[in-house]
Length: 331
Ligand code: NCD
Image 1 (cartoon, rainbow, N blue to C red):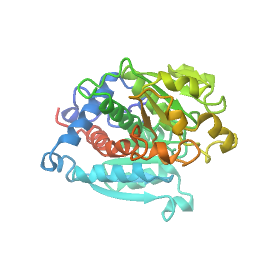
Image 2: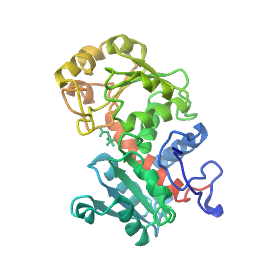
Image 3: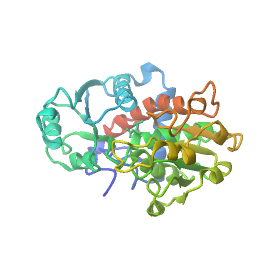
Image 4: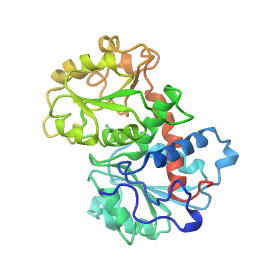
Protein backbone atom coordinates (compact mmCIF):
# COMPACT_ATOMS: atom_id res chain seq x y z
CA UNK A 1 0.00 0.00 0.00
CA UNK A 2 1.46 3.37 -0.93
CA UNK A 3 1.74 5.38 2.22
CA UNK A 4 2.01 8.98 1.37
CA UNK A 5 -0.50 10.45 -0.99
CA UNK A 6 -2.70 10.14 -3.99
CA UNK A 7 -2.59 13.61 -5.48
CA UNK A 8 -0.23 16.50 -4.80
CA UNK A 9 -1.45 19.98 -3.89
CA UNK A 10 -1.71 22.62 -6.61
CA UNK A 11 1.66 23.72 -7.94
CA UNK A 12 1.60 27.11 -6.22
CA UNK A 13 1.28 25.37 -2.85
CA UNK A 14 3.92 22.71 -3.38
CA UNK A 15 7.14 22.84 -1.45
CA UNK A 16 10.19 21.18 -2.97
CA UNK A 17 10.64 18.84 0.00
CA UNK A 18 6.96 17.97 0.60
CA UNK A 19 4.64 17.35 -2.33
CA UNK A 20 1.89 15.36 -0.59
CA UNK A 21 -1.67 16.37 0.18
CA UNK A 22 -2.33 13.42 2.49
CA UNK A 23 -0.36 11.83 5.32
CA UNK A 24 -1.55 8.26 5.72
CA UNK A 25 1.71 6.62 6.78
CA UNK A 26 5.47 6.93 7.08
CA UNK A 27 6.32 3.65 5.34
CA UNK A 28 7.30 4.65 1.84
CA UNK A 29 8.30 8.21 2.70
CA UNK A 30 11.92 9.15 2.14
CA UNK A 31 14.28 10.21 4.93
CA UNK A 32 14.31 13.75 3.53
CA UNK A 33 10.51 13.98 3.67
CA UNK A 34 10.54 12.78 7.28
CA UNK A 35 13.30 15.27 8.12
CA UNK A 36 11.32 18.03 6.41
CA UNK A 37 8.34 17.42 8.72
CA UNK A 38 10.60 17.20 11.78
CA UNK A 39 12.36 20.46 10.90
CA UNK A 40 8.96 22.06 10.36
CA UNK A 41 7.82 20.77 13.77
CA UNK A 42 10.89 22.24 15.39
CA UNK A 43 10.23 25.57 13.68
CA UNK A 44 6.60 25.45 14.90
CA UNK A 45 7.78 24.84 18.47
CA UNK A 46 10.16 27.80 18.30
CA UNK A 47 7.93 30.23 16.40
CA UNK A 48 6.31 33.11 18.25
CA UNK A 49 2.50 32.91 18.18
CA UNK A 50 2.33 35.89 15.81
CA UNK A 51 4.54 34.07 13.30
CA UNK A 52 2.31 31.05 12.94
CA UNK A 53 -1.13 31.97 14.20
CA UNK A 54 -2.67 32.58 10.78
CA UNK A 55 -0.96 29.94 8.61
CA UNK A 56 -4.29 28.09 8.44
CA UNK A 57 -6.54 31.12 8.88
CA UNK A 58 -9.87 30.59 7.14
CA UNK A 59 -9.43 26.81 6.88
CA UNK A 60 -11.44 24.21 8.75
CA UNK A 61 -10.22 20.85 10.06
CA UNK A 62 -12.58 18.00 11.01
CA UNK A 63 -11.58 15.35 13.52
CA UNK A 64 -13.30 12.06 12.63
CA UNK A 65 -12.44 9.76 15.51
CA UNK A 66 -14.15 6.37 15.34
CA UNK A 67 -11.97 5.07 18.19
CA UNK A 68 -11.17 6.56 21.59
CA UNK A 69 -8.34 9.02 21.96
CA UNK A 70 -7.02 11.56 24.44
CA UNK A 71 -3.60 12.71 23.28
CA UNK A 72 -3.98 12.47 19.54
CA UNK A 73 -7.38 14.12 19.28
CA UNK A 74 -6.60 16.98 21.67
CA UNK A 75 -3.21 17.68 20.17
CA UNK A 76 -4.54 17.70 16.59
CA UNK A 77 -7.21 20.16 17.79
CA UNK A 78 -4.70 22.38 19.58
CA UNK A 79 -2.35 22.23 16.61
CA UNK A 80 -5.07 23.33 14.20
CA UNK A 81 -6.22 26.13 16.50
CA UNK A 82 -2.68 27.41 17.03
CA UNK A 83 -2.42 27.78 13.26
CA UNK A 84 -5.65 29.75 13.15
CA UNK A 85 -7.93 27.02 11.75
CA UNK A 86 -11.46 26.23 12.84
CA UNK A 87 -11.88 22.74 14.29
CA UNK A 88 -14.97 20.56 14.27
CA UNK A 89 -15.20 17.22 16.02
CA UNK A 90 -17.21 14.16 15.18
CA UNK A 91 -17.29 11.28 17.61
CA UNK A 92 -18.70 7.84 16.81
CA UNK A 93 -21.23 7.98 19.61
CA UNK A 94 -23.75 10.78 19.17
CA UNK A 95 -23.27 11.01 15.40
CA UNK A 96 -24.82 9.14 12.48
CA UNK A 97 -21.93 6.69 12.76
CA UNK A 98 -23.95 5.06 15.53
CA UNK A 99 -26.79 4.70 12.98
CA UNK A 100 -24.49 2.67 10.75
CA UNK A 101 -23.26 5.37 8.37
CA UNK A 102 -20.15 4.05 6.70
CA UNK A 103 -16.71 5.61 6.91
CA UNK A 104 -16.79 6.79 3.30
CA UNK A 105 -20.30 8.24 3.58
CA UNK A 106 -19.29 10.10 6.73
CA UNK A 107 -16.09 11.37 5.11
CA UNK A 108 -17.96 12.52 1.97
CA UNK A 109 -20.59 14.27 4.09
CA UNK A 110 -18.04 16.17 6.16
CA UNK A 111 -15.90 16.97 3.10
CA UNK A 112 -19.01 18.44 1.42
CA UNK A 113 -19.34 20.96 4.27
CA UNK A 114 -16.25 22.72 3.01
CA UNK A 115 -13.57 21.57 5.44
CA UNK A 116 -10.04 21.40 4.09
CA UNK A 117 -8.72 18.42 6.10
CA UNK A 118 -10.04 15.26 7.70
CA UNK A 119 -8.08 13.81 10.63
CA UNK A 120 -9.21 10.20 10.82
CA UNK A 121 -8.86 7.50 13.48
CA UNK A 122 -10.52 4.18 12.71
CA UNK A 123 -10.16 0.56 13.78
CA UNK A 124 -9.75 -0.71 10.20
CA UNK A 125 -6.19 -0.86 8.87
CA UNK A 126 -6.17 1.13 5.63
CA UNK A 127 -9.15 3.34 6.59
CA UNK A 128 -7.33 6.67 6.05
CA UNK A 129 -5.85 5.44 2.77
CA UNK A 130 -9.34 4.41 1.57
CA UNK A 131 -10.67 7.91 2.26
CA UNK A 132 -7.61 9.51 0.66
CA UNK A 133 -8.28 7.52 -2.52
CA UNK A 134 -11.99 8.34 -2.59
CA UNK A 135 -12.75 10.95 -5.23
CA UNK A 136 -15.67 12.53 -3.30
CA UNK A 137 -13.81 12.93 0.00
CA UNK A 138 -10.01 12.53 -0.27
CA UNK A 139 -10.23 13.92 -3.81
CA UNK A 140 -11.37 17.24 -2.29
CA UNK A 141 -9.61 17.48 1.07
CA UNK A 142 -6.41 16.46 2.84
CA UNK A 143 -6.53 13.26 4.86
CA UNK A 144 -4.33 12.78 7.91
CA UNK A 145 -4.19 9.36 9.52
CA UNK A 146 -4.54 9.56 13.33
CA UNK A 147 -4.27 5.76 13.72
CA UNK A 148 -5.80 3.05 11.52
CA UNK A 149 -6.19 -0.37 13.10
CA UNK A 150 -2.81 -1.99 13.45
CA UNK A 151 -1.36 -0.24 10.39
CA UNK A 152 0.14 3.22 11.03
CA UNK A 153 0.03 6.27 13.28
CA UNK A 154 2.34 8.62 11.41
CA UNK A 155 2.17 11.67 13.68
CA UNK A 156 3.11 9.43 16.63
CA UNK A 157 6.11 8.05 14.71
CA UNK A 158 7.21 11.62 13.98
CA UNK A 159 6.78 12.83 17.56
CA UNK A 160 8.74 9.86 18.85
CA UNK A 161 11.52 10.65 16.37
CA UNK A 162 11.50 14.31 17.45
CA UNK A 163 11.61 13.31 21.13
CA UNK A 164 14.60 11.03 20.55
CA UNK A 165 16.42 13.58 18.38
CA UNK A 166 15.93 16.12 21.18
CA UNK A 167 17.14 13.70 23.87
CA UNK A 168 20.28 12.76 21.91
CA UNK A 169 21.12 16.26 20.67
CA UNK A 170 20.41 15.46 17.01
CA UNK A 171 18.01 18.33 16.33
CA UNK A 172 20.34 19.95 13.80
CA UNK A 173 20.57 16.92 11.53
CA UNK A 174 17.76 14.56 12.57
CA UNK A 175 20.31 11.82 11.93
CA UNK A 176 19.98 8.99 14.46
CA UNK A 177 22.85 6.91 13.10
CA UNK A 178 24.68 4.95 15.81
CA UNK A 179 21.68 4.82 18.16
CA UNK A 180 19.86 1.60 18.94
CA UNK A 181 16.34 1.47 20.36
CA UNK A 182 14.15 -1.37 21.62
CA UNK A 183 10.41 -1.48 21.00
CA UNK A 184 8.96 -3.76 23.65
CA UNK A 185 5.58 -5.45 23.91
CA UNK A 186 2.51 -5.88 21.74
CA UNK A 187 4.15 -4.91 18.48
CA UNK A 188 1.98 -7.03 16.22
CA UNK A 189 -1.16 -5.05 17.10
CA UNK A 190 0.59 -1.67 17.26
CA UNK A 191 0.24 1.03 14.61
CA UNK A 192 2.66 3.09 16.74
CA UNK A 193 5.36 0.44 16.34
CA UNK A 194 5.02 0.40 12.54
CA UNK A 195 5.29 4.16 12.27
CA UNK A 196 8.17 4.28 14.78
CA UNK A 197 10.06 1.63 12.82
CA UNK A 198 9.54 3.52 9.56
CA UNK A 199 10.66 6.87 11.02
CA UNK A 200 13.56 5.73 13.17
CA UNK A 201 15.11 3.35 10.61
CA UNK A 202 14.79 6.02 7.88
CA UNK A 203 16.75 8.38 10.17
CA UNK A 204 19.50 5.79 10.63
CA UNK A 205 18.72 4.21 14.03
CA UNK A 206 18.75 0.46 14.51
CA UNK A 207 15.68 -1.13 16.06
CA UNK A 208 15.22 -4.31 18.02
CA UNK A 209 11.68 -5.54 18.66
CA UNK A 210 11.32 -7.47 21.92
CA UNK A 211 8.42 -9.61 23.08
CA UNK A 212 6.97 -13.11 23.10
CA UNK A 213 6.32 -14.64 19.63
CA UNK A 214 2.61 -13.76 19.80
CA UNK A 215 3.50 -10.07 20.16
CA UNK A 216 6.83 -9.89 18.32
CA UNK A 217 6.74 -12.50 15.55
CA UNK A 218 9.88 -13.22 13.55
CA UNK A 219 8.07 -11.89 10.47
CA UNK A 220 8.71 -8.34 11.79
CA UNK A 221 12.26 -8.74 10.41
CA UNK A 222 10.79 -7.90 7.00
CA UNK A 223 10.49 -4.31 8.32
CA UNK A 224 14.27 -4.07 8.71
CA UNK A 225 14.43 -4.70 12.46
CA UNK A 226 15.89 -7.37 14.71
CA UNK A 227 13.62 -9.52 16.85
CA UNK A 228 14.63 -10.74 20.32
CA UNK A 229 12.82 -12.55 23.13
CA UNK A 230 14.98 -11.78 26.16
CA UNK A 231 14.42 -8.21 27.35
CA UNK A 232 16.99 -8.50 30.14
CA UNK A 233 19.69 -9.33 27.59
CA UNK A 234 18.71 -6.45 25.31
CA UNK A 235 18.41 -3.68 27.94
CA UNK A 236 22.16 -3.11 28.54
CA UNK A 237 22.72 -2.66 24.78
CA UNK A 238 20.18 -0.01 23.87
CA UNK A 239 19.99 3.78 24.05
CA UNK A 240 16.26 3.75 24.75
CA UNK A 241 13.13 1.67 25.09
CA UNK A 242 9.66 2.36 23.73
CA UNK A 243 7.27 0.32 25.87
CA UNK A 244 3.89 -0.49 24.29
CA UNK A 245 0.46 -1.08 25.75
CA UNK A 246 -1.07 -4.52 25.36
CA UNK A 247 -3.90 -3.80 22.91
CA UNK A 248 -6.52 -5.85 24.71
CA UNK A 249 -9.16 -4.61 22.25
CA UNK A 250 -7.19 -6.00 19.28
CA UNK A 251 -5.37 -9.00 20.76
CA UNK A 252 -7.47 -12.14 20.43
CA UNK A 253 -5.25 -14.14 22.77
CA UNK A 254 -2.84 -12.64 25.24
CA UNK A 255 -0.75 -14.37 27.81
CA UNK A 256 -2.00 -13.38 31.23
CA UNK A 257 -0.83 -9.92 32.22
CA UNK A 258 1.13 -11.42 35.11
CA UNK A 259 3.10 -13.78 32.84
CA UNK A 260 3.68 -10.94 30.46
CA UNK A 261 4.93 -8.63 33.23
CA UNK A 262 7.41 -11.25 34.45
CA UNK A 263 9.20 -11.18 31.11
CA UNK A 264 8.55 -7.74 29.71
CA UNK A 265 7.45 -5.20 32.31
CA UNK A 266 9.65 -2.12 32.49
CA UNK A 267 10.21 -1.71 36.23
CA UNK A 268 12.89 -0.36 38.56
CA UNK A 269 14.91 -3.56 38.50
CA UNK A 270 14.97 -3.62 34.71
CA UNK A 271 15.70 0.09 34.48
CA UNK A 272 18.77 -0.66 36.60
CA UNK A 273 20.12 -2.77 33.72
CA UNK A 274 19.91 0.09 31.24
CA UNK A 275 22.88 2.24 30.27
CA UNK A 276 23.12 5.43 32.34
CA UNK A 277 22.01 7.70 29.48
CA UNK A 278 19.28 5.43 28.11
CA UNK A 279 15.73 6.79 27.93
CA UNK A 280 12.21 5.39 28.34
CA UNK A 281 9.27 6.20 26.07
CA UNK A 282 5.64 5.09 25.99
CA UNK A 283 3.04 6.44 23.54
CA UNK A 284 0.30 6.17 26.17
CA UNK A 285 -2.18 5.32 27.38
CA UNK A 286 -0.37 2.92 29.68
CA UNK A 287 -1.59 -0.03 31.67
CA UNK A 288 0.19 0.93 34.90
CA UNK A 289 1.64 -2.13 36.56
CA UNK A 290 1.45 -4.30 33.42
CA UNK A 291 3.90 -3.13 30.73
CA UNK A 292 5.39 -0.31 32.82
CA UNK A 293 5.38 0.68 36.49
CA UNK A 294 4.69 4.15 37.84
CA UNK A 295 8.19 4.43 39.24
CA UNK A 296 9.57 4.28 35.68
CA UNK A 297 6.84 6.16 33.85
CA UNK A 298 6.58 9.13 36.22
CA UNK A 299 9.35 11.57 35.61
CA UNK A 300 9.82 12.62 39.21
CA UNK A 301 10.72 9.03 40.07
CA UNK A 302 11.92 7.70 36.73
CA UNK A 303 14.32 10.35 35.44
CA UNK A 304 14.74 8.42 32.18
CA UNK A 305 11.09 8.90 31.27
CA UNK A 306 10.37 11.08 28.23
CA UNK A 307 6.66 10.26 28.23
CA UNK A 308 5.48 13.81 28.79
CA UNK A 309 8.02 15.17 26.26
CA UNK A 310 6.37 12.84 23.74
CA UNK A 311 3.00 14.36 24.58
CA UNK A 312 4.36 17.91 24.38
CA UNK A 313 6.05 17.26 21.03
CA UNK A 314 2.78 15.97 19.62
CA UNK A 315 1.44 19.51 19.21
CA UNK A 316 4.20 21.03 17.01
CA UNK A 317 4.47 17.78 15.05
CA UNK A 318 0.76 17.91 14.23
CA UNK A 319 1.01 21.61 13.38
CA UNK A 320 3.74 20.71 10.90
CA UNK A 321 1.73 17.81 9.42
CA UNK A 322 -1.40 19.92 8.96
CA UNK A 323 0.47 22.89 7.51
CA UNK A 324 2.53 20.71 5.17
CA UNK A 325 -0.45 18.77 3.79
CA UNK A 326 -2.46 21.96 3.35
CA UNK A 327 0.41 23.59 1.49
CA UNK A 328 0.71 26.33 4.12
CA UNK A 329 4.38 26.00 5.01
CA UNK A 330 6.72 28.66 3.74
CA UNK A 331 8.77 27.04 0.96
C1 NCD B 1 -1.85 4.80 20.72
C2 NCD B 1 -2.91 4.56 19.68
O1 NCD B 1 -4.08 4.83 19.87
O2 NCD B 1 -2.50 4.08 18.65
N1 NCD B 1 -2.00 5.88 21.52
C3 NCD B 1 -1.70 7.12 21.06
O3 NCD B 1 -2.18 7.55 20.04
N2 NCD B 1 -0.83 7.85 21.79
C4 NCD B 1 -1.38 3.60 21.39
C5 NCD B 1 -2.36 2.77 22.13
O4 NCD B 1 -3.56 2.87 22.01
O5 NCD B 1 -1.86 1.92 22.87
